Image 1 (tube, one colour):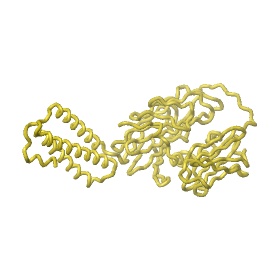
Image 2 (tube, rainbow, N blue to C red):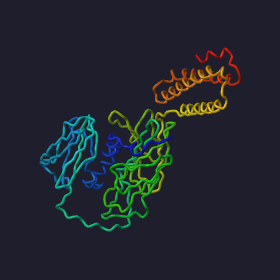
Image 3 (cartoon, one colour):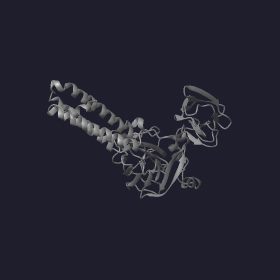
Image 4 (cartoon, rainbow, N blue to C red):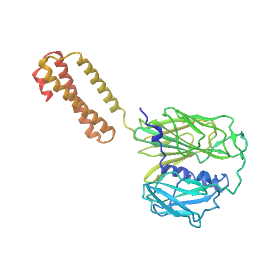
Amino acid sequence: MDTRDIKTLFRVPLKIVVLCGLAVLCGDVKVGFAQGGFAMPDPKEMSGIPRPVDDLPNGAISVRLIRGQLSNNITNHPVELHAGGKVLTVKTDDTGRAQFNDAPPGSTVKATADVDGEHLESREFPAPTRGGIRLMLVATDTSKPAKPAAPAATGAIAIGTQSRVVIQPNDEVVEIYYLLDLSNTASAPVNPPTPFVFEMPSGCGSASIMEGSSPQAKAKGTTISVEPPFEPGHTFVQVACAMPGEGGTVDFIQTFPAALEQLAVVVKKVGETRLRSPQISQQREMPADGETYIAATGGQVAAGQPIELIVSGFPAHSIAPRYLALTLAAVIALAGVWASTRPPAAAETGERKQLIARREKLFNELVRLENDFRRNKIDERRYAPRRAELVAALEQIYGALDTHDAGPEPASRAGLAA
């Protein structure tokens, strides 16, 4: 099956980013923060990332402007919201927040601000129709001297607990996203003892590095690599690929070159979609924006240990109609070549032309019927009898054409051209 352009195919839906970014898959994440098990990320790493919330009016967008740290709000400063060709401007209040209530719902928006000559902007995102959006724009704190770069030492990195595998079944392909948070807990840059390189699952088309990833991440075919050194803190890598979804099942194995601190998987539920994996210890279904997702978690996975994920039960179009159409096309093409080597007699030319025209009309109608059925535009009750009629009519046409080639056509066959 031909695959579409990966760069335009893969854009992670905002609702999935919400499930992943807010860590709602498992209560253990929140407990970990409360117990001090995770270091707060640098605010710069969160700058410009939209976060859906339910504590704002429907459609509201709140932009917080800070300098360096969360405690250093920038007040009475203009913030712009670019929304569908319009630019809305609101000044920050005493808490450093500028709230926009007039963005057209569903329009693509982006927040920007200029602080001391530094241009800040958020990612583009759709204006919410329900609930609100909060985001931060973080300016550089120029009052603090820049720390000299520390030399990189050999050290380990881990794939942190904020990492997710996201799987989306579609009509003809299954989209797979890896949202990886590579964590360096040391106070200096490190070079892992082995390169951070891995292969996407067998069956995937060419992979793509998505927007928001570290520039250190590279994709070449199905090979993903992240160039060292890894700075202290977090290095984000977001990868996407597609696999054929024929048969309603995908079964793939993935290994990573670093330890995964917690396996977390999000699967969009379509129809009777199910998720199975020997590494999954718990899962539940979660509604989001009118759709349902399977949220599953497992334990730690060692570097190089295979992770097997099986997604089944989602609707998939049968490949039989496509093969039938291709077979018929090949038969017609061969028949045309064969017939072209045997010019008909002058007396048969008119009837033969009528038969050929009728054949082409019936074949085109059969192809349209197969395509409509594959796209669910016609149900099985109408499809099966009509297809049988068309195939029977085509068989009669071919029989009549064979008779013309063999000799004069019997009078009883002439009615087929009508």
